[in-house]
Length: 117
Image 1 (cartoon, rainbow, N blue to C red):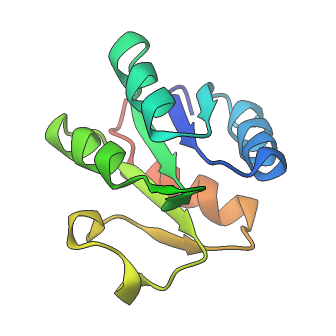
Image 2 (image 1 turned 120 degrees about the vertical axis):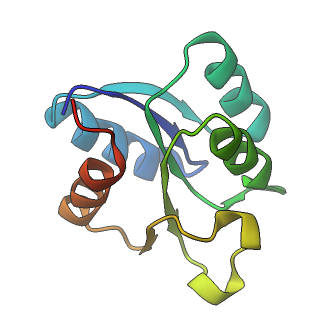
């Protein structure tokens, strides 16, 4: 999987686990970003081919990041403790994985959303 994958996750150890998993699969990690501001900055400066988003980041929601990704046609996978019915409508259609995360499930969903090539 050769792609640049943005990680938006505020739980340090989970962010590191996701980063290790993605790098082991052959992708390049962008981030991890623990806040909306850092994630939006990475999208502007580095760009990405896909993203892994936690919905709730400390005192903020990653909804603004999801909106920018959708505007740019960049797919994302949601990793959250929320149920799908609790997610904002703007996040509908993205694969949703529940915490605790199973790494192989994340890789399967990332490969599905990434453009072929």
